[in-house]
Length: 315
Image (cartoon, rainbow, N blue to C red; front, side, top):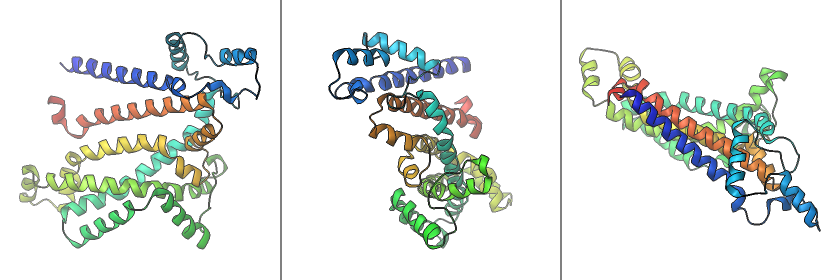
């Protein structure tokens, strides 16, 4: 039975990834005009257009081009940039670590804030701590991420001068400068994510605290921190894990504003450069990588459920 479920799950995952590949490939077909116009000079001859079309693999039947593109993509070849002629895969791999580090640290910081705040707010629902936390969450949620980033830059970089305004320092040039350059963008992203995490965890934790096993633990005289973080937190984390997976996938593909604001060399800034330069093959490659990462992250979230609650394995 378990093997059958695993096979079905893998089949669904393959089907979703296949649809993602089809949708990504068709991006070029949905773009108005001819993609090679962005690389051809004014007054290009028909021979030049034909040569450019062949160079970028845009000639031939649509179905044949798809399978050729898919085969190349499975081997790590996403074509060459239409502007810089750099392999798309190399450009993405160069920028991806920056975005992954930024997104990962933002999620980690958001969890470090959200777990204790959400748990204690649920435990003291309606109390002073809960009301203050709810108010702060509402205020934070009303501030757009780019505006929050500007405010943080003004306070900590311009007024206090304690952190750099923009720029990226590779970790090979020093851990301290590397961390300093990440603080403001990570705080900018994690603040919004933490609000969502707190709300989800608080609601689920309030329901869990009414369960019989929690009431039994209280009757046995267990301390409140042990009940909250040992017995109640794990079964309350289902929605949190789901939201966290969605947030991480979204951050990997959606840090455009923050990376641009803080001049970080990640995927977000590469997307902006590619769009302004009409580098369609680069955009196509980035979309494919982000979409596949999003699907795989959600698959990992599904696999985490049985770890959080063994009852899911027998459900």
